[in-house]
Amino acid sequence: MTIQLLEFALTALIIELTPGPNMAWLAALSLAEGRRAGLAAVAGVSLGLAGIGVAAVFGLAAVLDGNRILYDVLRYAGSVFLLYLAWEGWRGAEGNNGEKSGRAAAFGRALAQNLLNPKAALFYIAVMPMFLVPGRQDVMAQSLVLVVIYVSVATAVHAGIVLFAASLRPYLVAGPHERLVRRLLAVSLALVAIWFFWSTHR
Image 1 (cartoon, helix red, strand yellow):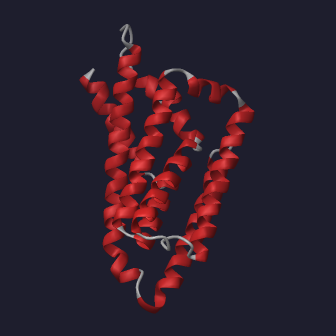
Image 2 (cartoon, helix red, strand yellow; image 1 turned 45 degrees about the horizontal axis):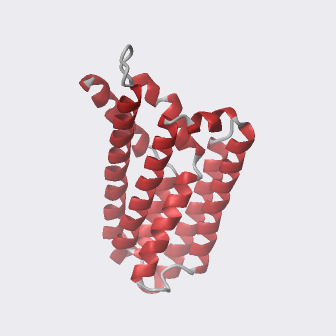
Image 3 (cartoon, helix red, strand yellow; image 1 turned 90 degrees about the horizontal axis):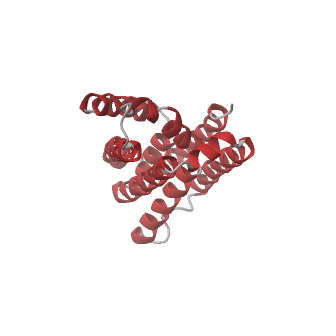
């Protein structure tokens, strides 16, 4: 079992290091709003991934995998949500309600973004079973352990991205170039939304 856990952790690390919507959005958010907002978003991402993981363990994600209409609804909704965040970043609407409300908004948006991500559910039902030890009766317990490992790895990677991006904030998002940088980040997020929509097509 230990070998399977290590192999699964390595697989999760490789997947999380691959550029995707969470990575791009967390970097953009941390550059625009700072470390605390970024870490609040990481908490939302982690909760969303954990929720989908638990749903997968109890078989709800299999329903999503077998229902093309529901899958497409979530795919469209997730892409539109990312485009909305990009538009909001372009307008510079975030960060005007104080730091505390900004963190709460970042957490909620990250949670919603990940609950609307069908790729996370497909990972749990397509990849995770390959790392279960065959012949054992505690399939649910094994699955929950793998969910915890995946969420832990994802949280560590995302927190690292936030801290790195936030460390660059004083040099990139300051002075006369602030609006330009924010709008470049918004355009980047819009491109990620398009990529997310294309990559989840099946």
